[in-house]
Length: 100
Image (tube, rainbow, N blue to C red; front, side, top):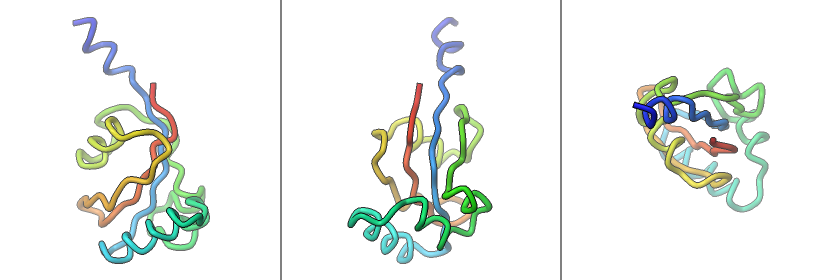
């Protein structure tokens, strides 16, 4: 029982961007990997309201985001661009900035 309570307290912070096509998602990922600033790319291209904050989603726990998103956020290495991740909303790039 203690382990489950412990797990429920895990919080992550992440930022993401959302676009409608996998192709655009791949292109934006390449730009970021080549040195473009994630926040600037999110502001320019993301269709999520979080784009105003450079894609910053703040802090959240497991189960607060859609399953496909959750699986990446709570398993991926920190500060590495992940994606494209397909959800019901479209295609995401995401970067986990902290977890603990």
